[in-house]
Length: 115
Image 1 (cartoon, rainbow, N blue to C red):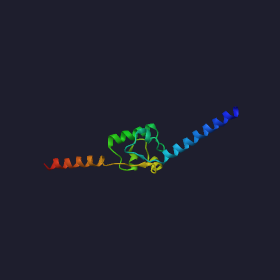
Image 2 (tube, one colour):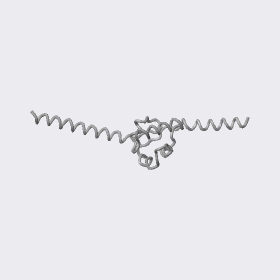
Image 3 (cartoon, rainbow, N blue to C red):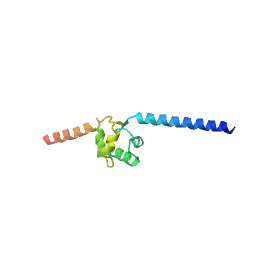
Image 4 (tube, one colour):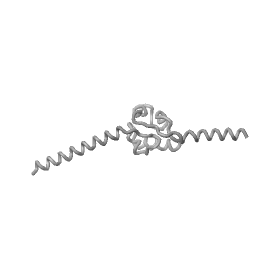
């Protein structure tokens, strides 16, 4: 009876470990879009914990979408080494919402100056 329990416990532990490895592999293979990811998702990046992830989200909300992965280095606490370690994991999605805002601001200023 004891040996049967031991077998079941070993089997359950093995299945749990295999599931953990498969889940970690699936998550590690997915890219993180730094323009749409929430703080929890950003924490999947190498050397990015809760504080740095929150800083990335705050920077993005204040300055608009990132145009490149390297622009992450402008976030307080994120250095170029951290960016380099994550280049294969980072995806830079839609940056369009940032560009029109800059253009419309400069063109309206130019129109106002011409009046």
